[in-house]
Image: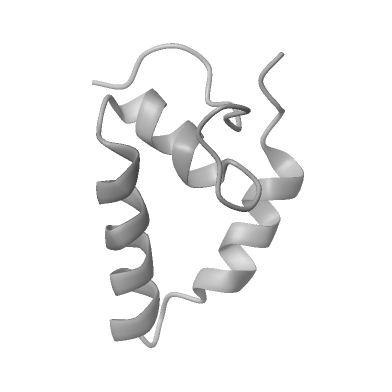
Length: 64
């Protein structure tokens, strides 16, 4: 079960830290979250991955 606040990661980031923050929140490996996110975005016509990532980057607060 996820614990704590969902925030963008400052240390584990490739672009905006969204996947790094999700990985820390879920307790998963950041690389696994990134790979799953890309696979979900590519193979699912109903999941607009880039749009969701941009929205999360705007909405999720940054780690202090």
